[in-house]
Length: 95
Image 1: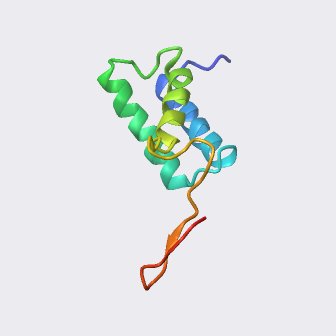
Image 2: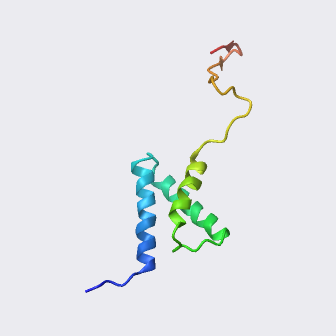
Image 3: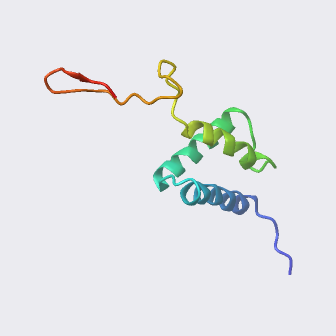
């Protein structure tokens, strides 16, 4: 017996796979993984991408990765992290 193709089930399985990959491989919390996927779904809807399209999840991955990166601080030096601190009395300690 051949099973009929169910687009909703396929979509749900692929979505679950992306969430699992974020959690397992990328060490993203479950809530954050769900949030990122929901953000992609909203973005894809804005772009007019049908959820059953061939590259829907392939295109999702780089978009999700870009959302995970913290924004670049353009004032911070690229090769050094600022480890300075200010004490309770206002004294600045270099780092």
